[in-house]
Length: 265
Image 1 (cartoon, rainbow, N blue to C red):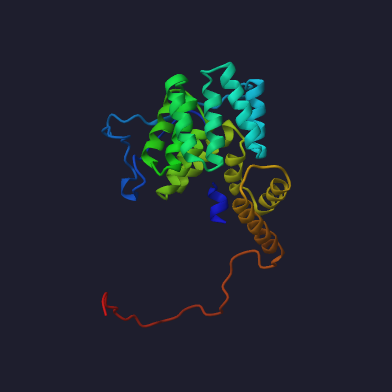
Image 2 (image 1 turned 135 degrees about the horizontal axis):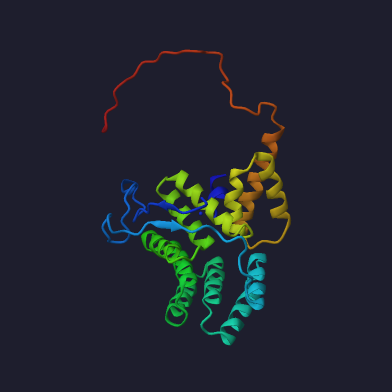
């Protein structure tokens, strides 16, 4: 269940603090990557646009293929876009995500670092953050996402990434706030939707899972298996007449003895 909710990011101008590492003791700090707390830029979230601009036709087709799980087709289309427009940051970012989905982290890293040289832009830095996160460089990933948002680039994937960082330090409230932002910006992104749907009722989640698993997606078999098990659990729970939590014992109070335990034999 937890893996499904985290497989595998508020509206209006709101300031959000960013912790530089995933160390729980660092919660509440506002410094970003070596800057002092007083000088650190906070995440300033612009209001999401009413409609996202339509992507170029071929890039849109590549995105559709990627979300359907046709990675070879998506790579082919993204590479064709780059042949026609070598400085397309969106194409580099999309191609990087395809490699990450195929678990080819090395190729994804090489692709995004090439993009930094020929197509540097917010979209590239958001994808770079995703590569860093997959490599375990959590602080570096967070900095990339924060910088992209603070540059005025309201990217749904950046908010999704920040949600994962917040959850890594057990800051769940802030993580869900990031997911709300991500969903407001791009409700069609399957990765964002799979997480956001965790806020819905059990019946709505069950319906979503049935439709999702019955359609085309780009998840690996392990992820789909986890979702199927979670769907079975949700259906079984819905049939249980004891829908609410309740005590299994009639006892209202108890007393027990406590004993000291040594730390060594």
